[in-house]
Length: 393
Image (cartoon, rainbow, N blue to C red; front, side, top):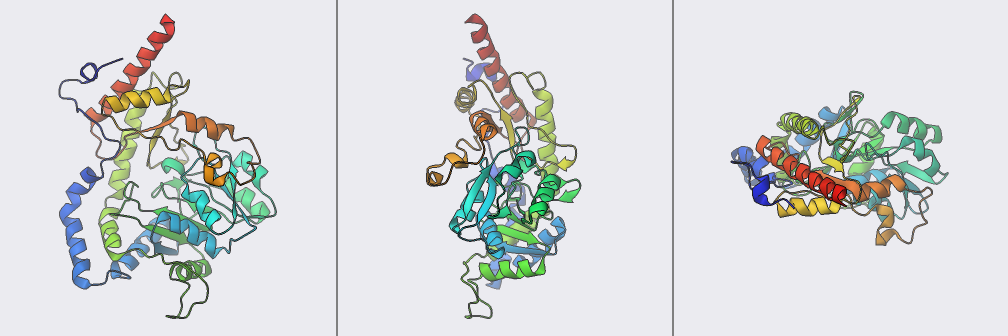
């Protein structure tokens, strides 16, 4: 195996983190502190003016009539389903290859998450396989714009429309992405965004947003997010307590002004990875694809490492001080908490294969060329070593 000394070029970084939230926040530190200080001085820690301003700015960015702030991306999904009246006996179609919250939102309302297959290149719901999951009990479909690239919404909406099923976009990882020029979050009936610190637009804690063009659905989301209370102390429905703190909104408004620049830098990093890995693509590695019809915002840069080499490669990266992550090592249909559900209605071979092969590499905007070179050098040397071992065997 290669040593750290073998891999390190003169002046090369000794380690490369998967994420570096502090590095991204550092240039904005004073601006953020000023925004927080203004909230402290106002005393309006809930429902302050920054919350309404952020809602207006996100609505404008997505091209939606309404954006409703809430406490997290998980709550945004839950509130969207609540607004549609999803409950016991209903089914909600979700990909199995995604973060847990996509499915748990349906489960928490007593509905059944129905796990559907993904496309192996985009990792998003496969529209061609979606039809197999729809039944008369289907109350909603939640495609996930995974890793920053839009799902095939045209085909998904066409199929959903044939069955009269509403579509909720899980846009947690894809703020700023587009589908045929249309911003994600404005395509389905409702959409959910996350402002978790590691997202492309990340706060200083949890935060979320629901977007929609429908006045009635926006009103219902707001109602459910405020204990179902309107007017004060009069509860029309049983809701939840899901608010975005004013300090979070103030921080996010500062960072939102830089989102386009950060997205451009993520895209440049993705293009450079493709160039550096060109001789490995399709042979030892499968690089992530970006559709020409969509704008990919690269929340993650996720390669596929076949042949049982993914875990040994990750171990080698760890030894060399290089961060990586597996999103997601266990498909949702195989999670212990969902074992009481009926098995998926189709074999989820692509989902299971992806869980065994995916590995996400550093892609954050502040990633330097030297750091990126180091990541690629380490992977190339690992693959060269395994090839030599294979030939010797």
